[in-house]
Length: 403
Image (cartoon, rainbow, N blue to C red):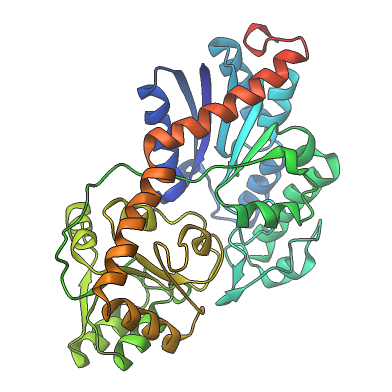
């Protein structure tokens, strides 16, 4: 297959950028012809209100991006276009050009931006779903849920809302890839107005890090940013009450608080930000990964990495994570924000070697069945083949059309 990957990078590299590169490498490794078109957010100038407004208007439809995309399609002749992020520079112009040139479009929904300007359904340290069913969510604008800016939130709402009215989201995208069934359900029950047939569920993947030790260190592990929504305060509260050791790897706004608690409590070990080798070693040697997030995580890579080394995960019964972590199979669920319930689940795992061995074995099985590169390529190629076949059944070969 000839696959054109399009991605609008972020000013600070994040998970979407990592997935984009990983899927590109996966497609190339399996013999596909792959070309990329990358739009860089580093070029955005938001120093003034006028520049912010102009950026917002271009996010609605960027004619310069449309021209670039058209030239790319004409030169590469893709069978399918796969978009990871189009906001803000690429803009929805992608979808109009692709439809004009009859190239099927697949888009991965890494976040909830199309149905909520916060993109994560989280605001002011709590779940925020007031925008989901509204074409133009005024409450979100007044709160400035995007970058704490009323103006920037308004321009984002204008972009998504106008394209809802135009039918862009339910007519010009052949297939959405949701990372979890939870995310798919949120999009289906929203103002997006897309049909179920427009969705496929395909998780992310990770390389095989190799099984961890059979004899684990008597400790639990947290890896992530030290922020409210990541549940770090809940974890520390549980650790102060419980009789177990927890290692905390990461950096962020709550660093000073974590350091202070680690100095007062021997069972809290703060290790700060660590490189890949240390993170992998800690994952392979801990009893379980603790994932206490209080918001709807998408497809947390750290959980997949834990499963690949046979490490169970104790996570919040919330969002996509509760789908990846299967309660009493490859880990345990606990009530979000409830330190006592988290402590109880940690103790349950700590008190039974038989329980740990079962969860560890199943964690590895989960990885092998769902999250390997080979399995992911199988999922992805079937999605591509389906949308290409549908277009060709209409009598036009996408790769033969020039405009």
